[in-house]
Length: 271
Image (cartoon, rainbow, N blue to C red; front, side, top):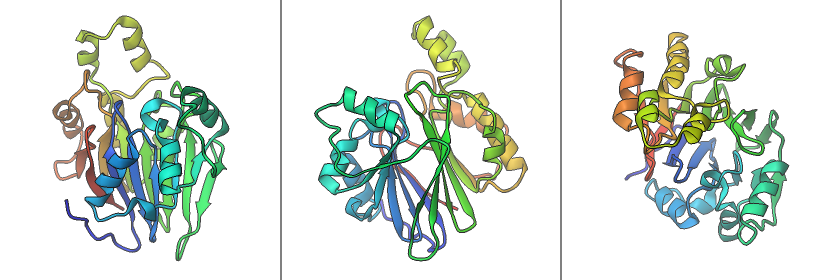
């Protein structure tokens, strides 16, 4: 998988893996590189980045969205093995430390609060990392919007439900990866017990294909959004074909849409 040369003025997002079996993403702006979430091993992240010609040690930071194991379980490894400072909220850090006391020891912690912005200096203009509080059922969950120059890219996963402000937020984005977790019929007719079904479609769970498609359709209508990637698809209650079909029937035929793989790297999307 050859690396595609990124425009110096662009924001680039690569999904290294997206799903309940582990999440990790790469973001680059103005030569500044960061990782988001550590739900896959450090070796997997290193190997997958190398397919794009990227050395994981060139990343400046690791941001953690929340405490669930598929997003945070390897964050201590990323710090100890690659020297990455870890940006995390206090509540998330405390929960991860309790879950993984042997793996969470980190010497360089950069704390932030949900609803605030972290500013990283680049070689020209700063990269703003906006932490958007979400109602997902973790300790202190956030999604991220990355802003560089006049471009904005969203990494919108584990959202809970369509919370106030989310529809307006997506209208401000040039590109986004958004969770499209489940197909309602597949969930209802599948093997998950009722309590787990209720959790997934509840206010602290995940967005369905239809809920995500509503947001994407409205954003496309406003003509700022350049592309969308669908992430965090359920292995049991969704499929790439099903998710794409739901979105495709709502969007112009030429609009760029992709699915982030739950088993490996996919995409090198730019805005």
